[in-house]
Image 1 (tube, rainbow, N blue to C red):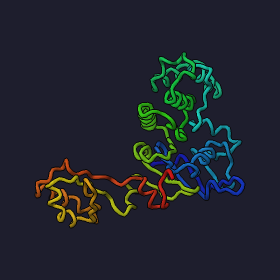
Image 2 (cartoon, helix red, strand yellow):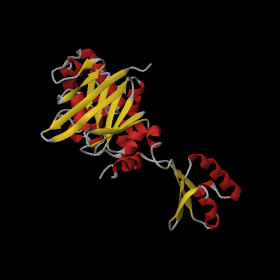
Image 3 (cartoon, rainbow, N blue to C red):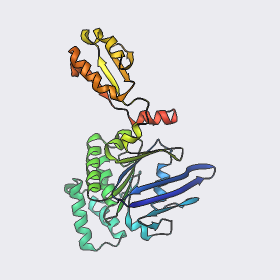
Image 4 (cartoon, rainbow, N blue to C red):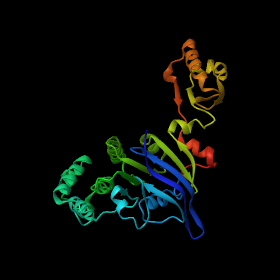
Amino acid sequence: MVMSMINIQQITKKYATIVALDAVTLEVRQQEFFGLLGPNGAGKTTLMNLLVGYLNPNSGTITIDGDKVTQDSLEIRKKIGFVPQSLALYDELTAQENLEVFGQMFDIPRKLLKKRIEDQLHAVELYDRRKDKVKTFSGGMKRRLNIIASLLHDPKVLLCDEPTVGVDPQSRNAIFEFLTSLNKQGKTIIYTTHYMEEAERLCSRIGIIDHGKIIALGSTDTLLEQLAYEETITIHKNPMTVKNQKGFEKFGELLEEDDYFELKPTDRFLLSKFFADLEKQGIQYSWVELHRPTLEALFLQLTGRRLRD
């Protein structure tokens, strides 16, 4: 049986008249990679600040590994690594000096801290730049350093608040691979993002948050089952496919564009029959593209607006 690592019960947080979180209840399991997906201003960062104990809620409770989280519970922070949205680094110090400063905050023995710093710098491919000042680093390098600074005390839980903001695709992939490896090693991770492709790629389970409420929760596949159409199919136009237009219509709603047809199947179980029919008609699979539904489409269906509106 998988045990709960984080338990959030009926959390409400207000700023004056603004309700940032509205009776949020959520459980994150041990060793889970959990994604919190929502637009800017949805309440993601507020929830992260409550989890780490920077803020107290107006009502409700949070426990991590069985211990209650409050602003005064300093011991609980030893179990948490927090990667904030804003970089928390000293530009005039070297990468190694930054990590030494953060490690000393947790009273890590000098010999153990030295080994952990070396191991983590190797893990994110920054060891060769350890003696360079952080101000000379690219945005992606700073993000990677920011992440390992939160891991020196070997926390059970890692909270990542949009850790890829402003980084190039190569650095983003390096961060994804590093976080995935951490999760496989046993770290429980909560990852906030407003990029649905990040949530789909990284997270085993996702909570969609909007206006301070969790509006959907589950695995990617479970969430996407809520959509009216399971898949859409693009059929590129050529003499063979145009000739078979009537044949496509028996499998669902067919929309015609300038260069292609778009088929919305009425039933996912018709897909196997659709592809069998293609083969029978001599239509090549290379002329057809199957598109899975996206979390962006689900968010649009649930809220009536796009994720980044």
